[in-house]
Structures are given as structure tokens and as C-alpha cells.
Length: 501
Image 1: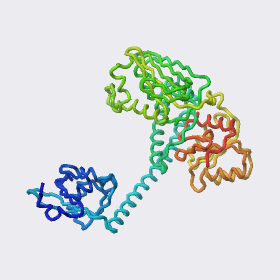
Image 2: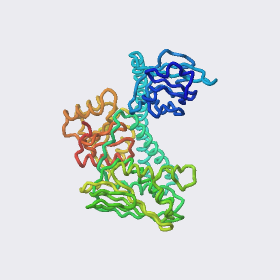
Image 3: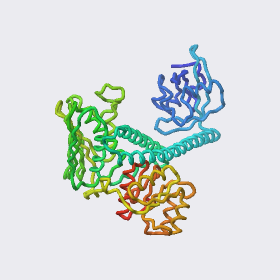
């Protein structure tokens, strides 16, 4: 195909493209075909080789060039070998077969063009850094506010009689705050400069299932659900992200409850499994090794055989309500497999469904933590340090309600002054890691020099301990009153050390 618009440039040593208004390639010279391969064939879209680093899409780039012609414009395109190539682009309009076209010449990038591209990239990075800093600030403030809400709400619920008419409303407040906490944590993860996966902690799957079951038992449902808990007494320890694994287990339980009729039973069971050779359970392929298995079984309607193979497909759902997007079990599958585990589902129409979650385990038994409110009381003296006064008030209220003596300081320097004076013997320090002027990390280093034997429990909604650090002495924000009390009890019992480098 020949074109008068390309006349004189057909044999140019640089790529030349004749484009339609939307960026569709009408004709390309041999240099363009050599540079971009099949992507330069007539009918192909310039967008196929247009890199996202350019500050506008192809159609907008051409429209700008038409409105405000420039001698050379920096662009970056994907070469035939998959290598990004920088060009200095010259764009002009041309008439071809009575239609307006764009003639795009791609010259080797000049120093000026490269500098312009570098400056544009730096400006873009600065904008992104500002957005990330804003996200980090919002995440930190949001976490502090949610910690206060969750702390007070869970404290009131723990003291409230089950028959209280306002209990269900408070449960809904707690659930909403927990959902908001998930969003805050996702925002914090997005804004964190280091994108490596969060170090997974050794956890107790029995306790996680127990808490989830208690949450559903305290929620008003439109059906009668009988819960049966069959937990392995000496369960192996598995490493998992507790927040993510809770989301996966809650989704499975929600599906189990929804599958029941007016009444039914849900059984939660855990067990240790040791495989001497690779094994397959339905679609879950498991390598040889030790596993913890959590099984959630219901006596509901079951799953049709033709539907069962598709349950993990994203956007596949048999539920008609608009709120169901078909992502629930796909999400569960992603969370579990990201932990190196597997998910198996067996079901019979009318015979219920069983979902088995396998997580790789260490062949050592998890520590059983205190689990009832009677065990959460104490008489120790605790110094709580945080730059958020509302959070200090919440912490003092919760801990005092369970017998602890609480001193508060809203800065690291004030905490050091209290410790240096030695007016009172302090059994445990709870400190936020991110504070202005003196951070929690700096405070910990000072405390280590002043009082090496003092127990320390660190907390944050943004900074996380690394895998080598002592996770038992770290409390993730936002937290409930029970989370705080359990961690305090554990830190005092274990002689907790700081979760700081």
C-alpha cells in the first residue's frame, strides 16, 4: 500500500508511521516494521507499543500535537525485542485519500528529549510520593481512631449482659469498625515504600476459629445454627497473616450459614496432618510435609456437581443478589495458596458441604493463650505511650477496668522523664512505634539503657516487625480491648521483649 502522505519518507532510516485519528496504523515504512515487528502492520493500534510511562494515551498525544505543534516530543515505545526505546517524536497532520491523518516520525532521542523525559518522570514520581505520604498519614490517623472505637466498644460488650437490648447494635458497630480496619490496613500496605510481603507469624488456628465462631454466635441471624467445635488439643504451629486468614475463614463460614435452611449445624474441626508423599485432595495438591487442616462443614443444601468445579473461578456466582460479585471463594483460594497451602471442597446436593483449608505447619505445638475474661485481670503497673490522647484514654479505661495501674505519656520524652524519676516501679511499657520528635524505636533504645529488665510491648498500624523480631511483643493497630488485654497478659508472662530492630 502506498500513500502520498508518506512520499519521501518511505526509505527513511528512522521509523515513520501514518496514523488515523484514533492512533490506528495506516501504513508504516520499512524502518518502523524493523523497529516494531508485527505491531507496525496496517490496522494495528499504536497503543500496542505505547508504554504507560508516556504522560498521555496515543489519541490524546496526537490531539495535543495537533493543538500545539512542537518540534520534538519525548516518547517511549516497546521495540520488537520487548525492549523499551526512547524516541524524539515529530508529529504533523497530513491529508491522505481526503482524510486527515497524522504523520509520526520517530527520531533517535536527543539529549534534550531524554532530559525532558527524565524531568517528566521525576515530576510524576514526586506526585506519587506526595500521594503515598498522604495515604500513610490518613492510614495512621484512621488506625488510631479505629483503635479507640474498637477498644471502647469491645470493652462495653464484654461487660454487657447478653440480654441487653442494645447489644446487637453495639455488635454491628464493632463489625463496622473491624471492616474499616481492613480498609485502613490495605491503605497502609499500599502506601508502604517496601512492598515485600508482611512477615507471617506463628499462629494458633484453634483460637482464630474460636473467635470467629463466637462472633457469629453473638450476631443475630435469621436461622437457628448449632455450632460444633472439634479442635485438636495439641495443634501444630502454622505461620499465617492473621488478618488475611480471618477474612478467608469468615467468608467460608458466611457461605456455610447461607447454605443452611431455617436450621442446621456447622462443624469446625482442626487436625494435624503429616504427608509422606505428595497428595491430592480434590483440586488441592499438597507436597509432602506437615500441615494443619481446618475443616468447616455444614448440613446445608450442598453444591450441584456441574457447579462444584467452577466455585473458585473469579466472578462466578450462583447467587442472584447484586451484592454478590463471585469473588468470595476466589479470594479465599488466593489467600490460602499465597500461604503455600490448599483449599479442597467436597459436597453433595442436599447433603451439605465441607471446606478444608490446609496450611504448611511446623511440627511444634502452639502455645495456648488465656481465653476467658477471668484470666485477663492483673495488678501490674503499665506505662502507655502514644501521641494520640484519645487512644491513651481508651487504653487507660480498658486496662484499669481489669485491675491494672496505668500511667500515660503522650510523647517519648515525657515517658523517659517518668522512667528516670523512678517514682513508681513500671512492669510493662506499651509504646506506639510512630511518634513525632522521639519515635517508639528511639524510646525503646533509651529504655534498654536505663532499665534493661523492663518489659516492652510495641504497637503500630503502619510499621511492622520483621521475621527475625519477637512477634509476641507486638500489637497491630487497630486492636480491640480483648486483643490489648491478651497481649499485655502474654508480655507480662513471657517477659516480653521489644519488636524493634
